Image (cartoon, rainbow, N blue to C red; front, side, top):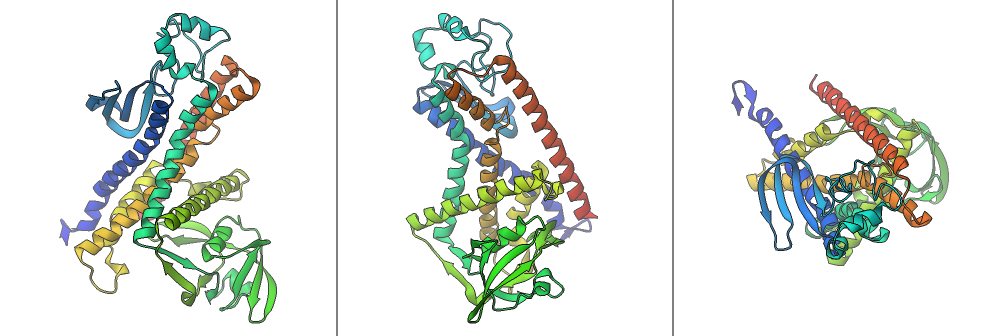
Length: 421
């Protein structure tokens, strides 16, 4: 079906991508901020505002404990504002700090200032003020946001493994691609990969992760072939391929496919599904940490980094994935298309939730990880880091974060234009 000569699917891509992105971001941000909110409430901190989005509130209501809940006009994030905060970044408000200007810090701007501030607050106000809580309590509240993202991902993975099951595969070679690094190294169909660089391999996914993070360096493989065990060295080659949605991506490849006879499918009970969900979380975090390391050392292409546009693109593609009939042997029903799209979208939400949690834990001031870094210093030394040092750190962190956003957005635009051309 077409409208004005354009396929209907093409006309739907942009609005579906925007809507899917906003839904995805709202869900993930809500759980992140609810992590901060719930632990703060548990530890006796008064929460003034819980906002999904920024800017002018479109909807607002106040709960019985005095927290104002908002849905704001710009749905690109959210925040929790504690009693005594100037803004969403938990900076002490001027009215609490005697209306004195001071540097951006995670606590009071100078030694002794806490006592001055305390004189202008009642004991009841001090008891519910975030800034007067002990360092362990502030640490727990700040860490609760990223932890909530990880919990959300585990719950999603567990739900999928219980309802749909999980496909697994032992690392047995089913096919070797012609003119590939694998065939040059002497790998043959039927080979069972036992270890890579001395680390035991039990699943085909582990082998894929090794190749993905190889940085093009040679991999030493221990292989079972018939009754003998041999050692081969294979160097992955970077190739431009297409992901499941047809986007062009550069990745390291060996040129081997798994053996379908060694694929298994299993549904899990609640406890087993949770265990597998935790394992999947650990795998994604491990890949993320090692991937960042590859970028820092120059072994990985920084053009692979993506930002909001890429997330929106994948959100839209996942939400419409069930309507791509090329993956079906027979024309599917509308219900089947919707189910496939929903599963893809939910799976993407889990992965993005892990990524958001991981990003927020990076030791960069202005992020949760930066606050935790300052709190770690305070816990070890017994006093907050100096106000000037904290302020400089926050400014550098803001510059770094803005620069990163500009860079990944530029990447997104270039990758999007190259996929269209």
